[in-house]
Image 1 (cartoon, rainbow, N blue to C red):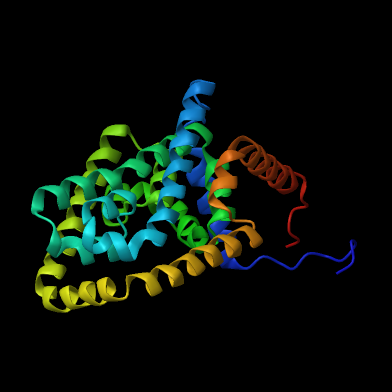
Image 2 (cartoon, rainbow, N blue to C red; image 1 turned 45 degrees about the vertical axis):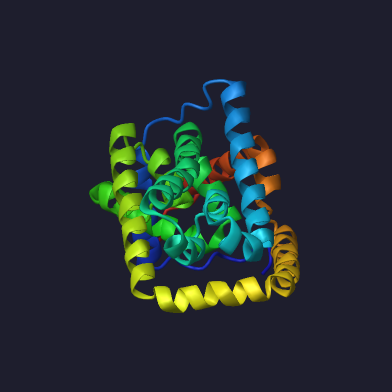
Length: 267
């Protein structure tokens, strides 16, 4: 389309979405920014470490699922890992390690949301496009059900959005703790019902751990390559967090300026 071509008219849905997003943005607190360079660097360093450890868990999965189940969920408390090792762990290590590992990254993403506000949401939409639609939907109704949303889906993008939306620390931690414990209880119950099948699967993994490890190395490598090729490398995104947030902020300012300078629609 040429530079002088008229823009396509906005639909009613587009106008509703934009209006809701603007209303939601106006009620959010002004982003405070990191309290210090040290706080920012520690947050980035911890999140980068967690990403690397999660990649490593995919490589050692076949060996750790039977021999070191507690270490496996300490590295990555994915639903798959939690379900597989539940039958091999007592309730204390299962709930204790699983709870800490699930809650830890959410805390830091909540801080990123508090520090950077709407720029953090735009940054997450760009780096995790599968969550983009979810985040845009949440902009329209998060204030009405923020506790329920965080409790049902206590994950990284939702935690970041909760921080950007100005959710209080008390409400966020209460909702996240409730949701995390509920998730662990459900996974534990599922694993108990299907333990015979899961136990057989663990035995299969143990018998073929080296071929499975080789396949895992390839799959992890492909995942990293795919993310890097698509501009969604988790480690690089976090290392260059300040630049990414500045870019997102500039993009939002440009959009706001374009909207302010746009002509009124003809009647």
